[in-house]
Amino acid sequence: MPIDRRQFLKNSALVTGVSLISGISDLGVGIDPAFAANPDIANGSRKKSEVALTFHGAGDPALVQKLLAIFKSTSTPVSVFAIGKWLQGYPEVAKQMLNAGYDIGNHTMNHFQMKTLNAKQVDSEIAGCAAELKKLIGNHGKWFRPSGTQYSNAIIRKAALKYGYNQCIAYDVDSHDYQDVGKRVVLADISKAIKKGSIVSLHFGHQDTIDAMPTLLENLRVKGLTPVTLTTLLGA
Image (cartoon, rainbow, N blue to C red; front, side, top):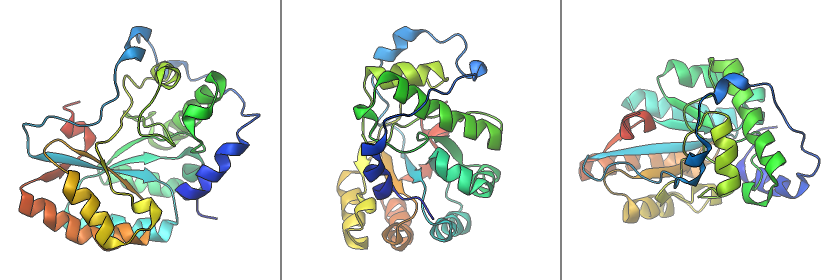
């Protein structure tokens, strides 16, 4: 069965018993734990006319392919925060996105509500997805976004550092597409908030996102905003 965000939110109440995953010692070498106090990254430079379209990676692969086809036909670079369990089910999609030059990051193993977890469970969620990414694409991904929350906390940041993610990626524009609010609402929510340097939160697995994408890309063009990957936006 395809994995979507709403199902993961339901699963958050069932998180007890998550086991600690270890043995990925090469992902977090030489990182100063003091960086755990750093704020999350919610946007890039406000001086450049660039924005990052970031996607929560899960959902029906048929819907995902429709989005990927739009990105390919419009030469639109995107960044995808993949969920580990979804990667296990559709490993070929991760390779497809990597071959297209998109950023692929960690969005936890099971998409639980991260702020409700204890330190051991948080560690397990990040480590599990990092391991899946390394198996599929050869590395743990440059970026990490916690699930079930726009921003991290100290426990999440400390665990993220352990696995090589110096800062957590948040966003300053929420499309609300995962709520299936309709194309017009998705476009309006993005339009009223987007600006130079914005990081936009979007989702695979929702028809509204597919329906809105051509108009969204045209709206960005009219506003003089260019979609880029997080790597480009943040100069990393």
